[in-house]
Length: 280
Image (tube, rainbow, N blue to C red):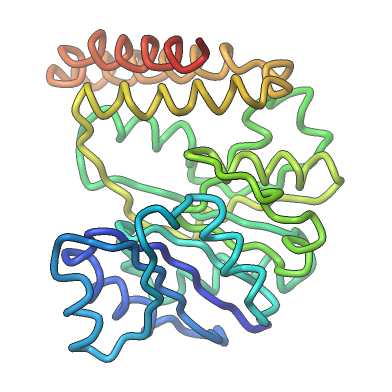
């Protein structure tokens, strides 16, 4: 199957060359095009792309949308599979893409997402452990009873979807979603009896050091998303968040991670208050 890779860019001068090189090194896959969608940036992104003869599409800031930008590129694709990635993922394995699309090619699932690890020993280390375990799995509608909201956990930081299914389900329904567009589409996949594969052998490093202000802003957007898509509450949105918080504390105590334990109450507070503000 042919694969088109779709990657939004913004102030991406520190990522472009290493990311592009890692994509070109992928083995055992047939990449059609790599679509870089660059939102107007203040850094040297444009110059780097031009100097290295890397094709890209330039977007005005008012044109960018996490959902609509990806949706438009996917609808225009002619490939069998569309692969969404984020500019800040680090790909060290030349079989990352092969492992990601293999379950789709074998007809086992209609969409997949990669395992994400972090380079940092912070709270994100434990959230990655919880959300991206070492064993692969397939999620279907039958898993809702046991997994609840996590049935729809899906990340387009590194994901693949059969393009005809993406089109059939009308992508993100033309909605301008500021966050969680991946969960929005995952819900549609599962509720229409399609399957999502988590591919533990397809690994990317996705590392952040969010400030409390940044965390608050992100969770405020998540709260707004859940308010606008309140049908998700029936699957245990609060239970899912609470379970993650408990896991982080348990792991930090076990490893006696002092920095995380000091940060923990403030970090969780920023998430909680942001979510609450967004839901209002």
